[in-house]
Length: 337
Image (cartoon, rainbow, N blue to C red; front, side, top):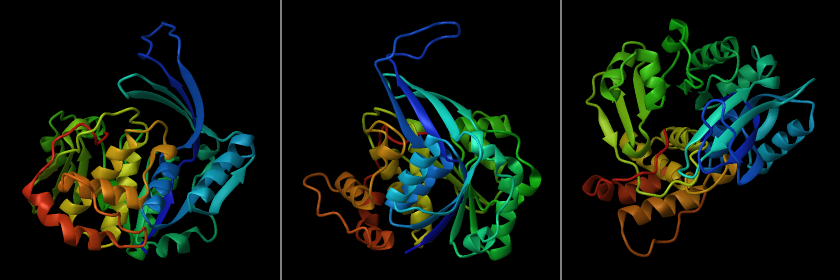
């Protein structure tokens, strides 16, 4: 079983569902409201755990009722919370509006996440024991840098999601093995709206990039290799919240098991496509068996074969289906950016 450490945020998502998002100064009537566990770090941790990884979450929750719920949700998903601290004050929250097309807008209030400024005793060894460290930017940048340094010192792959997007220090880029922005984040980082040009620019700073493109799928670029685009599965999106985090968590699992990049991207895209068909963040994330079954069905139209058990390595699934994936590329609307 692949081991993954996540240094990141844990938030309670306060989600309002509306027919359309309000314009500036406008009030609209919503049709539903939910409070669901989220946070980019916790989301990626849950996604990886549901895809079969052994995951440890490093971060903090507040001393409020949300903190209790957030910790319980991670535990229920199979994520270790041994390094999830409880600090005085409120937990982080994300205020999300989801429209009838599945699009969303989000305001994040950091709460306890803002107090994570470095590693606590034991965290360095937890990172060193992992195959990959997943990082995002909902914690203070100082903590992200400390985590990346620890990963590099131990030879652990660092996968960085640059969201919420902000200028990235050269040191952090130098410590990043794989950068996974969406197309808007890639444009903000480079000033280039064309994803291929943006990827080329980013390769000056990091060795490998995956840009998620929404309905257009994902673009992979690495130094010394030709860019690769993998189309998204065709699905109807209900709620794209956390689909990008689902993709990153699943991708980390596949890469940790030694799956080649193209097959790993297709498998992670299947997980993301499943998530956008369900409401919520962590609630929408599929199991490994669901992802395997969806991927198999998309490659072989007709009744899907029995899904692989959660303990089966992704490489075993890929070896049986990669040739079909190469022969019949998909089109679609499922992979979130």
